[in-house]
Length: 299
Image (cartoon, rainbow, N blue to C red; front, top):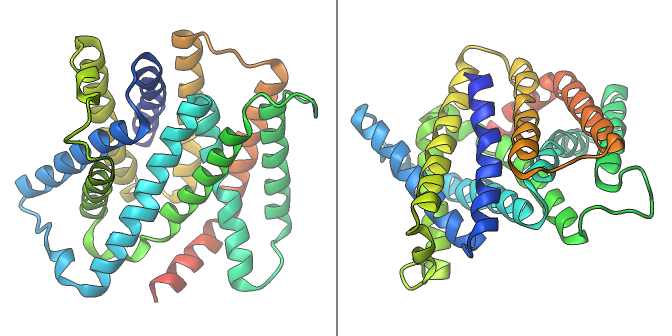
């Protein structure tokens, strides 16, 4: 489940890059279509499975947390990822997403009011060195991506860290798919209202058969990836999940190289390898700390 789900996630990155690059579709419009339809698909599946999808709204505290998670966590993650892909490419955006363990480690240290342990310092330094090599190709005078792409990438890491830590109690109490389904639907409707999606002329860009099919596959693959990724947590530990999910950036790289002809220099590839190694190191070393913070947050 985790390997296949991560590979599907890896495929959706280049798909999104193609849609944004080949059409005049904007990030907010694509985000509205993707989140709204995915939310409807998930909630419809739960209704067919005879789940009470409205129970969470009858709890005032859960209702508030669901809205916060939907806007800051899920919508924030999806927007920063899409915008990062649009500003750079799917490889850079996916690897920036893997900076979340650094942010989580720093958050844990601040929360516990103590210096991070040695393994965290090593993991953070190693990941940052890898990120530096990826973005500069090893030269201080050669920044390969724009400052805007870096800001979006760092925002992506922050959003992913929040997305990972915040909804622990919600998902434990109400179920992962119910929270994700409502989160997607709320996020998609919110963006749609802001951009007045019913008045936009961007719908015409989805009329072409190739764009329409790509958008449909992008939405379906992303929804299935969510389901497989989160369902795998019933059978394997978060540590195994973090290790096996490294298939995602590897899939993105292979697909981007074959599809778009995207090329990474030798030093950049070394940076990617360092990031994957040290992010896995951080994830393994932090499993107990993250669990403790989740328990504290739930209480």
